[in-house]
Amino acid sequence: MQFIEEMHDIALVYGFSNVGNQGNFSWHSYCLGVVRFIYGHAKMQTSSTTSVSSSASAVYSTALPDVSTDIATLNSDGIKALSTATISALTTAQLALIQPESIPGLTTAQLAALPTGSIGALSTDQLPFLSSAQLTALTTLALQELKTSQIPTLSTTQISSLLQTQIGALKTDQLQSLTSTQIAALTSQQVISLTPLQIAALSTSQFQAMTTAQLSALTTSQISNIETADLQALASNNSQIQSLSSSQLGALSTQQVSTLFALSSLGLTSKQVAVITTTALSALTTDQINHLSTAQIQGLTTSQVAALSSTQLNNLSTDLLQALTSASIAALPTATVAAISTSQISNFNVSQIDAFTSSQIGALTSDQIASLTSTQIVGLGGPGVALLTSNQIPGLGSSQIAGLGTDLVKSLSTTAIKNLSTDQISYLNSSQVAALTTAQVKSLTLEQLNSLSAESIGAMETADIAAITTPILSSFTQISN
Image 1 (spheres, rainbow, N blue to C red):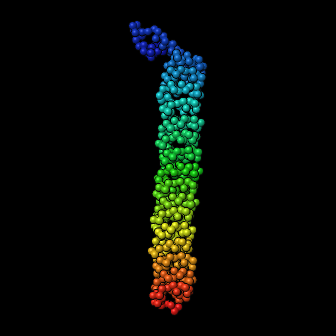
Image 2 (image 1 turned 60 degrees about the vertical axis):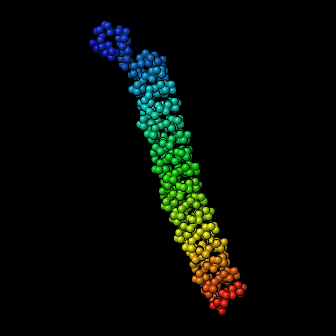
Image 3 (image 1 turned 45 degrees about the vertical axis):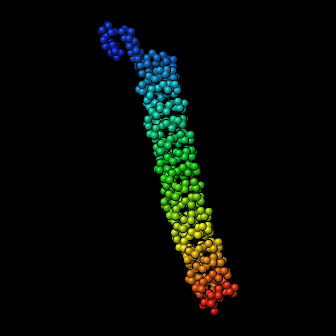
């Protein structure tokens, strides 16, 4: 009785609801339905776990394509024997029945024949069994079907086998689902294939997982698309940040450079700092500039130092200021030199003062001159002292004049001598007065001569006294000294 009821159900399933109507009934169709039922019924009872050979599966799949339960029993060879027509007719439910171990049996032709959405329907148990050849055979559209929950199940071997075009076609959410281990498995060529949008989509942890070889492979276009947080993460790892080439660092935007210099400890080498653009460097805050080490400051090019603003220069720590090379000092624009604060000018070491060019010395204000120490005055040297103008001379105080000594005082121009105030003249000791040239003594005014001490007058040589003009000499009150 049960068998008869099942036979009746067969008729209903295959559309023979009018069995009693002889006009619409087809014995041929009915019998075929019965055969299908009996065959499927027997299979479900006896062959649910038995593998089917390739030859048997080919016959079976062709004759009975709508019986889905048996696809789970096919081994790798059995799957391979299925026609592309059969494969293209598989539903996602039927595809899910394929044993993971049988997945390698799918040929590239069969993979190409799979209906849209099939790759995304593969289970996380099936995906790891796809070979490198099978993966590379997938179209970019098929690969884009992969869900974010599926991608982490792929092995590093599978990931590294993907074509550059496939990597470049991954959607951002797919890329973000890659684990740190998978990211590290990407080849340099695969990394290069990442689009700017993909680079921007990578998480901080993914950037931290990148190898130095991967980072050094990034193009300048990719580098410029790294997000702020990601760049900070790279900068916190010296080996990663130091793997970036000069061209890569040169491609950093002003904002990206600012991000790097905002860190209390900048892991860049001196050579890397030297390739930062002058635009980016000049845009840094005074605090950011002071994050540089003395070695990094010394690594700056003359062009970079010349691009520093007076505000940046005035706020450099003494250690960093004195780390600037003589060549860098000589590269400072005169406008920048003139804007150096009096407190900062006194922090320059002697070799730096000595590096000032004639134009830079001429740009110094009288207040800056007044702030120079006696040691720094010596650093100007004879040629530098000789360049002091009448506008700068008033800045010389007693300590600076004393610092001139006997050698440098002779370097003062006659114009400079004439512009010394009576107080400044009085700061000259007898040895300095004795060292004055005849031309310098001749340029002294009556007021200046009268401000000299008796000891200084007594130190003058006869030839110098003789050089004083008669009108001045006649009014020289200290001539008796």
